[in-house]
Length: 218
Image (cartoon, rainbow, N blue to C red; front, side, top):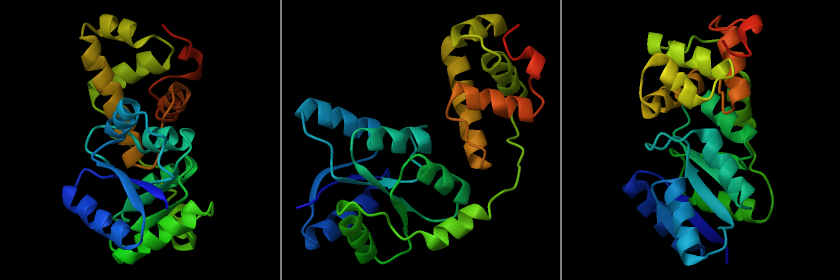
């Protein structure tokens, strides 16, 4: 029996998936709204990772696609993205982070059960249509950062610790951290994900926020 975790911040979606898993003989070991909640459950119960995690593409807790997929894959779970299929850039990010494939939320619920069976056998889903959509999403888009977000990004990407960035700008550390989180989310939204500090530097240089000469800090 395949052990399945369902992560989606819409309870109605989770309830539908739970019913489908029950009909197909899968064991739903966790159902919740976020990856952090799932990890806390595993640690508190000392449960081994689920065989397959069905994961919503975008959660409402501020986490990124790369963070969520990478964390789950690193624990040994196979990840199926359950998405409404209208964000090819985020789909590309999920697949790059190690997701086994994507099932549209508009698909029959039985398709999710079939996808779970396929992935549980160690196979990837047939993502031909998704790959086509992803490959066609190559527009270099402006992330439309605010003035403050550009200031935080300029200093942080140039090499300064976030606490120093906050002190330099006269804002709280939490404010600077929130700005960097929003910057990452905005870049993901336009198909230019920046999950690491090196990626943020690259984006800042692409957008003229920092120069190659100024990339080692002020």
